[in-house]
Image (cartoon, rainbow, N blue to C red; front, side, top):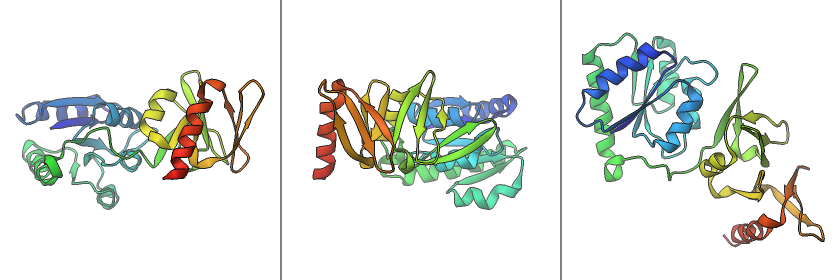
Length: 243
């Protein structure tokens, strides 16, 4: 099993790591200190399961669970508060570990996890080739907002961030354009070295005599178009139209 531990408190992560390292079928472990690291590792580390804290700064565990790409890893919520139990199981958690827990209770949680993994087709190893996430979590000035991927018309780079252009706002997400496009899949396509568009949002393409231009989006948005990416973008649009 490949396990991701997510908790903003180091002692809590250390306890889970010690317990998991004793299990012969745990083949790889990774740790995340917050929800944003967890979402990044869910794609690159490809865990079979996540031991996920609920109360964390910025993005909490429930928001992380809702933002995982499908097929999502199995989730065991780990928290000191029992008030989230119903919401946790609504999020398809397989267990809800209340802190502090002992080794016996942890063992029962692992047994449930193993049973669910055995029931998965091919014994359920999760790979990063699943469906893309349906929403992104963006934190600005201490406030976390949920941005539906379907609402993003185009994306552009801004130093170490990307700007998610929607009809209502343009929040910043700390992520590379290449990394985000890899997670979002073929629904988005580069139109410029520093920009990409959601194909389904394109209304028309305006091209200048030099081959550059703009991608005009439904709702009034405009994304830059460079000659370098124009042919590939047109091919992607034709494939979308044919499907």
